[in-house]
Image (cartoon, chains in turn purple, yellow):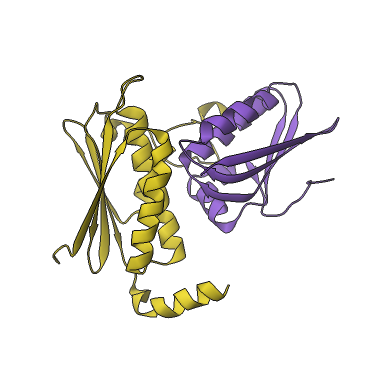
Length: 110
Length: 160
């Protein structure tokens, strides 16, 4: 069980692809890799969750942390290509009202 | 109340790397019992959340204890018990601080933890907590009415 993180940056945006299972064991690695990306001013980060096969509150916590930090720094977080399962989690926790989530790959590879 | 048909128990070190092992186990048990894919995923999350709470709250750093997970397998339901025998956290008090985020929640109010217990309550049919010499969480998930259609559902799923 593991999580893989791939990052691509251009001068405008940061793209991150996450795959695998995000739980109490792997969430700290994800946080460690992703949180530093939120520190700059005006960063726009797109996180593709297409290949995330498992997510629970520990993973939601990582994205909430990123979202808060980006908001503070006038940046933006976009979560894209969520499976129905993942969307359901963001819906029942109410996070979908607050954060930008999408089941499409919009903005990816633009 | 129907009698328990089978009981399975596991004991894991209170370390996050073992939460995934419990997830695999519960997935196997729930699948054998005939739950749907969606139900199995819900059960996996709820049981993982309980194990995560036990692993993260029960023992201070440098002190690894154990978490016991019991599965009561009935004809019409699955009962799961997650017990840490270490230090307890105040489940009911913690529970009061939980809940879904609403549109009026400000960014500053967003909490990075605490959603776990909320998810357990939302995803399972019954949840009971015993907070005495450690925390024990009991969770029940009933088999749906569609059980008789399970074989069909399974074969549909497998062809997808």
